Image 1 (spheres, rainbow, N blue to C red):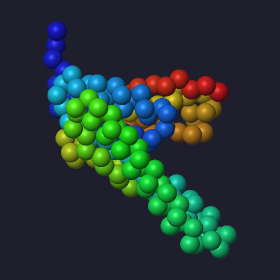
Image 2 (image 1 turned 45 degrees about the vertical axis):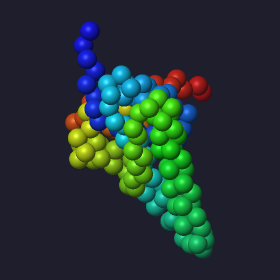
Image 3 (image 1 turned 60 degrees about the horizontal axis):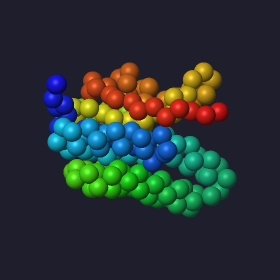
Image 4 (image 1 turned 90 degrees about the horizontal axis):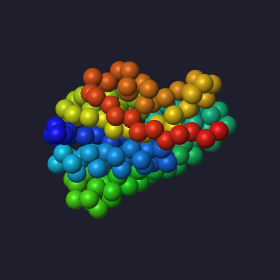
Length: 157
């Protein structure tokens, strides 16, 4: 039997239901390989920019800071969830919150920090749903030099 040799694994999370199975699989892989996990969540400044433009045009500038703080809080909760899973299994998990375009930042972080594997979830949408919403996982798979393991949660229409 071959040895699993993933010493530095990044679990990309957004706190959604589809990211939880990926977190569980990533933690189990880390347990089997004796690796360290880096739980990473990216606050999308692309989405934030859209909200800021809308609120500014509506004369509601003070609210964008509340939205931004809320997004950062959700991101911290997402990485803390992964950290909690790791603690239950005796796995070291470093929680990281980044800002920017999610796919770009995940790829950048993984490559700059020498990750052996990126683990992330996906809804598994197909057809028009995938086209309309895009896919962070799809962009990471297409552009990352680091291997990517995608754990799929079946999308129910």
